[in-house]
Picture 1 (cartoon, one colour):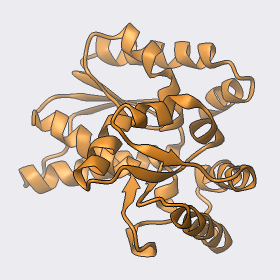
Picture 2 (cartoon, helix red, strand yellow; picture 1 turned 180 degrees about the vertical axis):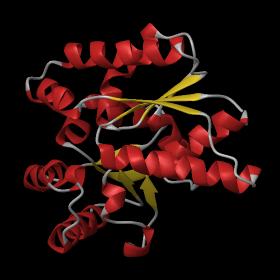
Picture 3 (cartoon, helix red, strand yellow; picture 1 turned 90 degrees about the horizontal axis):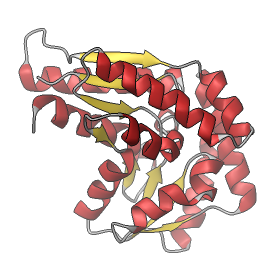
Length: 230
């Protein structure tokens, strides 16, 4: 098996989800007591949040690139960034390493295309919903994104940072997310991307009557394929 380097801690809750999912899937395939060879480097999330709030993406890119280099130097055969938002800094990471980088948008887009869907709702942090890096990545696969309105985006973002990132799961927040998704469906969305790795802690496919693309799970599946050499 290949060794996977994970850039984690953004947030600890979603990083734990990645670690659990990857090891569960590896064990399902390999059996016995097999677990995945993983090197995890967990950043201080507050440092990243400060960069986000200051719109200092250069600084966050340097932090993540330095981490990626360290992971490669101690034996990682590939790098996974366990967060959606910070894929804004994917170019800086890619420029710093010589091993493969497993991109979350690629994993998500392939799953959407496999269901012959070309128009989806995108939920995530305000950075994901309002900046171009994520929707442009999806557009390169021929996928159109429908965004929530400004008030809805603010609610989605607040719930992610104030609740989900610190492990709080609230019924009212789930209802708000489902209300927003229903509105986006009425606008033509044929599926919904959970474009923040924490959102899957709140809602899942059982809650909705259209395809749900849980990016953390899809990214974990990509990681398993990489580790197994598929």
